[in-house]
Length: 400
Image 1 (cartoon, rainbow, N blue to C red):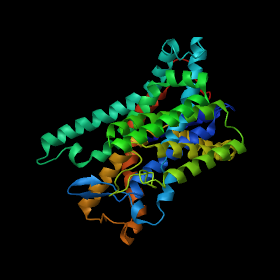
Image 2 (cartoon, one colour):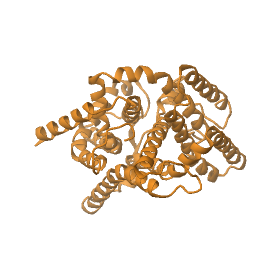
Image 3 (cartoon, rainbow, N blue to C red):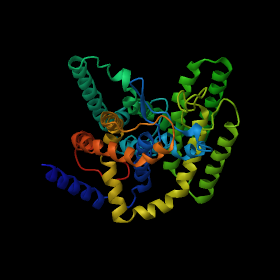
Image 4 (cartoon, rainbow, N blue to C red):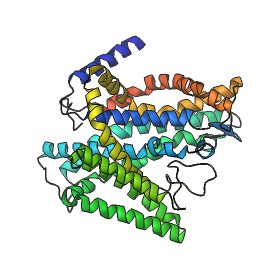
């Protein structure tokens, strides 16, 4: 059965590779996959994963390694997800307009057949894998609570397993407002994103001035919408060319250097243990600036990436990875938990400091979770493939 499934997947990937049109933005697919790989490896190998009082904790070693915060300006890839999402969603929005015969964008009347078609397509891909993940974990947790004495429940000992859901909830939020944000982008362009950036800065000012976290939660939404809007500009091609790409990257880098001189903005773009506050949640304006910097780097790398991905072998690898990307993202923390339970059972060390033992164990912390993730992919990837399968005639264009 496993071999049969493998051959089926191989044939399916081969068809997708063969049918890829020349207009496909292959760099977008590569960056989506690369970003997920960075997240997975960060959680598995670059966090100090251990049990503290029976609870899975995963502080990172950034604060304890000199200048390690600089790495987070590249490896904090959540802004990249949203920028890529903006690119892909504007393409899908345009495709929905052509399919429904309503290509014009009207911010005053964004909801109609075009919006319904767009949202139906996006949510069909996102919600089934999320629902299966939630239902499976709810069922497993319920059984363990009933069958295992003193089992504390996932929400007490393994809340980190649910980390993928909060990101996907934020991503779902920006998808739901695409009919509005795409129409506003097409009508107002850079005026809107400049206004949005100013609002993000003002909301942070209000948060730090009043000490109210309510403003932080407001910015958590606004910052991700801002990053998503950047993807619209990438899709429209207005930032095309090495000069504009370099200018975008330099502006973002200068902005990061400036805001992180302020006490309110930590230099690390990921949360660090013991810090008074972090940039990620509630999300600060520093993440919006990081999105600008990372977009500039993406634009600079795009020509070389697309040349590389024009070759069959690397493109096949990207297509294969993207076929299971949601499954990997949703279940990689479950694989980590299973690996840690196994390590504790056999007495393997789980250091709570970045000691020499911790560094020496990094390969194991990639290999063991990967061994647990592999069967989870086999089990749950069909849900993702079924959700992504087109209804009606197959579509392989860049708007998918």
